[in-house]
Image (cartoon, rainbow, N blue to C red; front, side):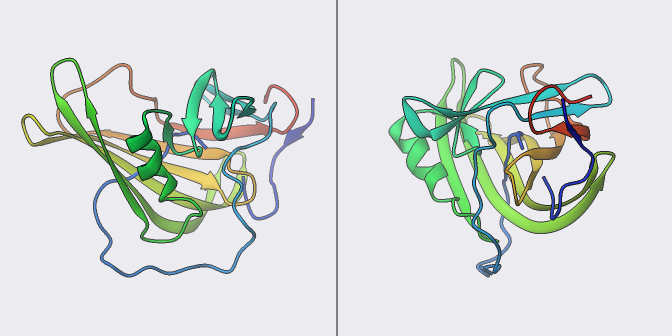
Length: 193
């Protein structure tokens, strides 16, 4: 097991994600191409025992990244129907200001999901310093018009690994939502410690 404490230029899953607008300004960065799916075996550990384990690309669809058994499309949001995939495809390759919106019919509500690439920022975690893409994801209950919650994910520019995830509940609480975390260890070939 090889623990990587700091990776040059940085190190997802959050998932992800974004709501809100940053105007119409779109800036591109001259940087290496972003590979949105970390390699199989990459593991991220958090202080509370939470772990993210990447299984690489799905064999039946190279646009799907496997993370802890979930199918994550483009390493941004849960895989879904053609409309959802088309919206999420708009975010890759990442550029500051890019947005995507999807709609989901739940059992008792109609939901709007907004994704936005809001920043490219160097952050410091206990696992090291990383150059990251910052993705914001917001969910609004369209039945009531109320913003439910927001997730902000920090994805390493070099590897696609999520090194931090902030979770904010605006109205209500859903225990099925991801937990906030900050990486304390990252392993490129097995469990992080």
